[in-house]
Structures are given as C-alpha cells and as structure tokens.
Length: 272
Image (cartoon, rainbow, N blue to C red; front, side, top):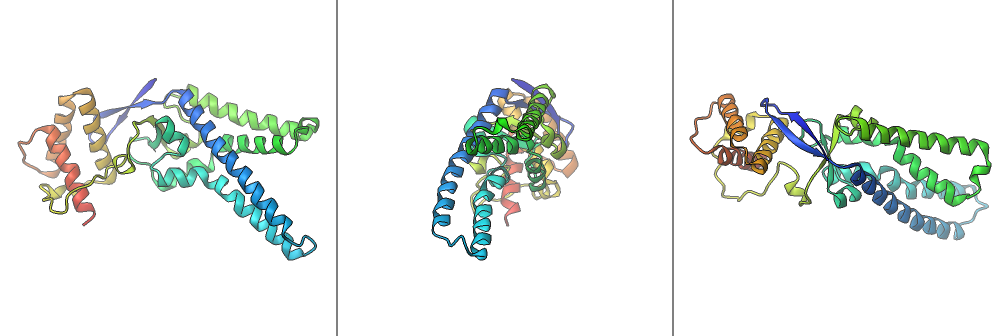
C-alpha cells in the first residue's frame, strides 16, 4: 500500500494511504455490476413501453427516443451524482473503503467531481463494450466495430497504467481535476467531512476560527486525525502554535484538545 505526504496550509505534511489497485478494480466492477442490473431493468421497462405504443405514429417514435434517453441518463450521471452526494464515494468505493478527495487532503469541490466524471473515458468504454457484446455477440466479425472495441481497451489500459505507475495513483481525470483516491474507514457521511454534531447550548471559545478558509479547516482535521493515529504530539503542537500565532489566540490548552475545540467552534459558528 502506497503512502503520499500532502503539505497543508500550516506547512505540515499529512500522510494519506493510497488504496491498492485491486481495491480500485473491485470498486469499479461493483459499480459496473450495479449499472448492468439497472440496464436490464431499464431494458424491460423500455420494451414494455414500446409494446404499448403505436409505432406507426411519428410522435410515438420521438417519445420512445426520449424515454430511452431518460432511462439511460442514470447510467451516464451515476458516478457524478453519487460522488457529489456521498462525499467522494460511489457504492463500489463505499464498499471497498476508498474515497475521492482534493490533492490537499480536503473535500473535493463539485467542479472537481464534474471534471473527473467528464474524463471517465475508460469507464464509459467498458459499459459500452458490455452493451455491444450483449446486443450482438458476433460483433467481432465487423472490422469497424472490432477497431472501436480495441480502441476502447486502449483507453482502459492507458488509465490502468497511469493509476498503477503514477506516484499518487491518479488517472487522467484525477490529474486534471487535482483529485486523489485514498483509503478511508467506513463512517457515516457526517464523520467523513469536517462537520460534526455540536450541542445547541455549546459555547464557542475561539470565534477567530471563522477567519480560516475551508481548506485550512480541512487541514486542521487531517492533522488532528493523523497526529492521533500516529500518537505524534509534536505534529499537533506545531499546528497548534502556528494557528495560535495566525489567529492571535492565547491558550494553554493541550494541542489535541485545542485542535478539537477549534473544529467544534467552527461547526457551531458555521451553521449559525
């Protein structure tokens, strides 16, 4: 399993575990399987609608085309919608414990997810190949279709080579979107972000925390989690001192407690 070090806003490097290739592959296969089963259901729905329509009518033909487009739309937007709504995870990624994040370790933006989705060339080709082979098993007898399928595998192999050989395990879409895939333990969605539940009667101690950017808050959370995991007191202490100096805070609280209070203050103040 690879590990990369990401510099945060406080000049402290945070380590992230890059998932093994097999995890990414199984995650992709799970997503493709889900899409395949949906397609079979959509196919039955379309056939049922087709049987009940008057094919001699021109309007009926246009309506069927629109229905077909509508039924295939979930396949096309599957990854974009799930990764945006599930904090960087599709169903396959959730099962395999991996997640898409910004290169700086924070939560990726919607625009980054969309860029990554638009460049999911290999995934689209895989689904298309499966559909072509199911609809016509003799497709390899056609020279043009054979060349198209070979080109599809070429795109797939290119993405695989990039994912395996690049330092951060990035594919074309990841490189251009500035995202990476990391290992993550299964948690509820509220725990996968900087947000956490805070009591309504909570009293924030450091309102200055709102001077920091979302990237800074993500960095604080990453540093705190890494320092706790490794038992690295110096990492937490260094981050605490930099934050105190930047926000002009005078506190004798322990570094771990100080960083946790900052996150709680942010969560309380950001929703008020």
